[in-house]
Amino acid sequence: MRLEDDFEVYMKELCKKIRNKDVHASLKLEISDHLQTLKEEALLAGLSEEEATAQALARMGDVKSLGKQLNKTHKAPMDIKTLLPVLIASLFGLLVMYYLQFHSTFTELQNMKVFNKSLIFYLVGILLMLGFSWLDYRKLLQYSKHLYVGTVLILLITVIFGVRVDGLPFLILGFANVNFIEITPFLLVISFAGIFHSWNWNDSRKSWLGVGILAFPILLLFTTSALATSIICIIGCIAIMLSSKASIKQTVAYAAATFIWPVFNLVILSQNYTLINTVDIKNLGASNVIGSSLHLTPNLISEVHTDLIFMYIIYSFGWLAAIIAVVLIVFFICRILRAAKNIPFIYGKMLVIGLAVTFASQFILSILTNLGFSPLSDAAMPFMSFGGTHILFEMIALGLILSIFKRRKAADIPGLT
Image (cartoon, rainbow, N blue to C red; front, side, top):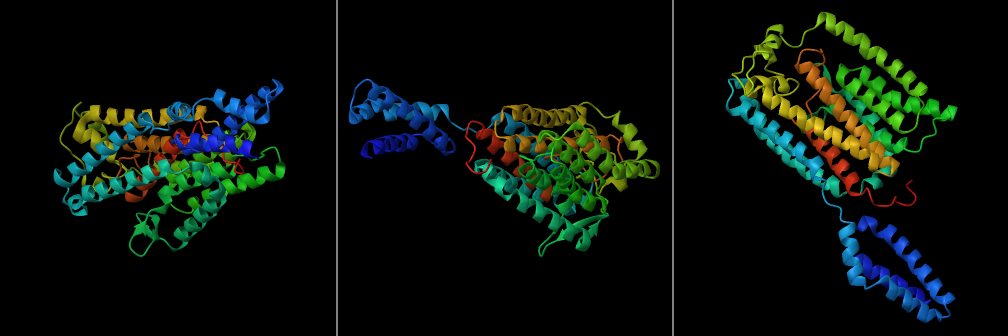
């Protein structure tokens, strides 16, 4: 028993040298197996058990040297290539809010203090992002069902009792009205990734149950005027189905059934509603490469800092700035989608894919609206549009993605797979 304790002491001292605690469990298992193999070889060579144990430890190497080497190998640094474009886009969004508050003729927006509020939102968002990047995302898996139930209940309360602002129901809290609708896609994707990471779509009963779980919150969203959010959620559900090995037939059937209502509403909106003045759309082509003076009709003032921020960037900062903003977000989305292929843990892979598709859908719908190709009015530009709720949850989503990337080499947590 004492000889086995020598192995335990060795591994305990070794793990003290390795800062990345996420790999301790897998390393202990690997090193223990290797030590046992070395010990068995020594016993076959005729050594006593005590001598075999000592030889196995000696062949494994000095604990300090090995610990230093393993610590270097298993470092989990922040993924700068993923983080940097988001930080630049956020700084640019903050610059736009500064320009709106202090250098525009929109006195209504100046009274709103968009820069001051945005600065607070971004700072809090960065702290949340850092916190979630250090959190072991795998521990969220066991709370996926609770998150789904909580999201659906709060969504139901918002739909029934929420205060309508520009047609959208806002959740009433004691100190503020929260736009819970716009963060629903992120919450659903996080919960769906945990619920469906090991779902058996070949089982007829499970298949129908899965469709019901995916469809219920979508039906609740249909009762609101949040058409863009509904579309983003549907696309996120399709991504979850495909990544959880649902068949093409099942996925197409779900997509066809859920898209009927949004398509019907889009047709009506396209015929009877124009969000952006046609004169302003034509003026986009006349904007300078490096910016021009802002000329917007009064009816756009209430939206220019939120849904129509990309249009404002084109007018005020030029097409070059707008293209740079697009490249930053596209690079971010493409990078996380590409990195998802190297994530061994299926829950982490589905989480990254779901969040990437959510960001992509939100971004594309926002661009289409700003360029006059879409009548939708509730798709915010990721990391740039004014709004505390969506900025905070976009930063939280980024933190989860960074947490997943940091733990790509870590073993699964026993009992959660």
